[in-house]
Amino acid sequence: MRAGSAARLLVSLAACLALLAGCAPASAPETDAPLPTAPGAQRPETPAAEEPEAPFGLAWQPSAGLNPYDCTVLSNRAALSLICEPLFTVDGTYGAAPYLAESLTSSGDGRSHTLVLREGVTFSDGTALTAADAAASIQAARDSAWYGSRLDVVATATAVSDRELTITTSAACGSLDALLNVYVVQAASVGTETPVGTGPYRVENGSLVRTDWWRDAAPAVEAEAISLTAVTSAAELRDEFEYGPVTVACVDPNAGARLTYHTDYELWNLPTTVLQYIAFNRNSPVFSHAAARQAVLRAVDREALAADTAGGFAVASALPAPPDSSRYDADLAAEYGCDMADAASILEAAGAAAGEDGTLALPTDDGTQTLRGTLLVCGTSEQRVAAAQAVVDALNSLGFSLTLRTEDYSGYVSALNSGSYDVYYGEARLSPTLDLSPFFDQGGSLSYGSMADSEAAGLCDLTTENEGNAYDLYRYVLEQGLLCPVLFKTYAVYADRGSVSGLQPCLDGVFTLPLTEQELGTE
Image 1 (cartoon, rainbow, N blue to C red):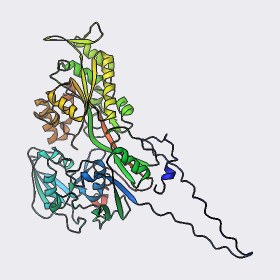
Image 2 (image 1 turned 45 degrees about the vertical axis):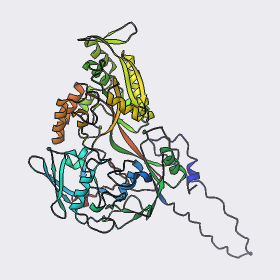
Image 3 (image 1 turned 180 degrees about the vertical axis):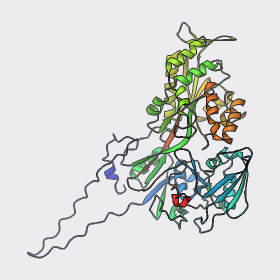
């Protein structure tokens, strides 16, 4: 057991995840009594023993590697944020700020963009960052495991000088800076397991070692070397943090089974673009009727779901944008807040009537349709199953007759692809621009159950061109009952108390240290 672990075990289990619990250090053990001395002799002072400094450690999964384009494991990506740095950062308000990029300008049609790199940036091996490295990194990120299809809009990225590259997009793109929170590595290393980055640490013999960083600022971690401890499960990571050498742990508390961290720690909530939502199979006789979908939007108590099922690691949202985002409109969100009376009125206005068993039925062109069906959810997450069950209970109290259907991941995806469900509770990581086109584009990666909608897809394109169009997109989606947003997840960063300083996590950047006003040239 490492130094300090015994003291940690004294911390009460009542320390909750949302609070930064504090505890007093355990008393030092008594030392042997000093030998007696002759009368009148002066007893020499015994120097206080110094407790050796505990090494700094991070967890990782070796099989996932440390390539920023292929790696999808949170623990590894926490380490990556010490090795690599992005062109732009996206903060907790979902606003983009230049980092390795100094500026980004666009032409009149919004399809040609000039990106200028910051001067004086070097990789951990001392070589200078060039536009060729940035261009290769952007190309590697396109359609990669982590960045997915968010950069589909990028047609080309070409270096035109040491510090300048030209980026062309297939459509006008007013938020390209947010899409470019992409880690940059040396062009020659983009396909390697441990690429060379510009961060304050490099990979050496299975550890992270401090390097000559190009910035004057001190990173949040002071250690000269950081050990990497291999873990294979969330429970093992928790145990290595509580009893082993792991100093900082980045986790998704709601990914699978709920794990409680008991020891004394500091805690940061890391913003994400992971949306949980309810989506409908419009081929289902139950939810082909817009009134049934509209009633669901009013019957979901998002605040309760976030509080009761996500353990504080989520923010409720009636819009497909986090409340801290500039795209969020509070007045529009209020129109679609939980209101069971309003939900009942919508169904009543559509002619719904209860049958002998109390289940509502809606009149349709093909006769009366009973609101009976199944709600599908992936059973790998306790939180999602609990949230889906709460939705079923709420709708059934309204007059629906829904049954919860849980499947493992492969069965869940199979059911979505085959359309063998009526409504499902889903989760998706959106791009930093919160693009909804995967739901509504024909053939989109999330357009299950005939969700594709040409009007919504067109509004998505306009929002990509200018985010000011988000309001029209969200209003249309909600009015048509195409999608029912529920919450946005947050990740957790646990750290030994006092082990890091100045930590300001951003989107996909646990240790990424924001540039100062002087570095940004805004002082």
